[in-house]
View 1: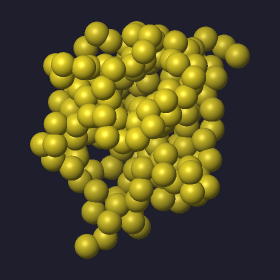
View 2: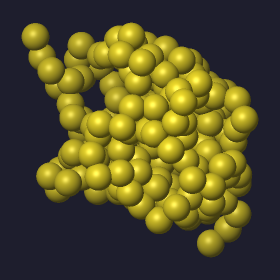
View 3: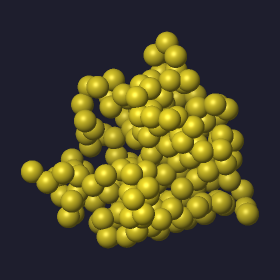
Length: 174
């Protein structure tokens, strides 16, 4: 078996990748994180310091050859959490105060990783052109764990093996 590549927070800490900060609305190209050191980060815009969204392209190549599908994986990272042991999800008694330090914003909104139902599946990826991740109240969303709704909206425009285009709105211009 080939293990999949580590998540972006671990690769960033190991200096295996660089975050490219998104500071304004626009259309952004992204290459698979297996062949590019660059993935995107959105911080601020209603989020607490240390809380941000990371967008990466995961394709069924190299270390990720055995992934269930290819597409965007969108992560929510909260550096204010000291460890990865505070499980939480909508309906959990301490949500949203209880949540992982690093979590996948699962496209299907089922929080199966947090509920220990599975180790992830194809429905967690953003794969179809036109799929949108936006502010709540519905799940999944771009809301801050601390401050509630943001205006951040991420739309998948194209899904190809080597360059995916996505659009970010709700940030304004820098």
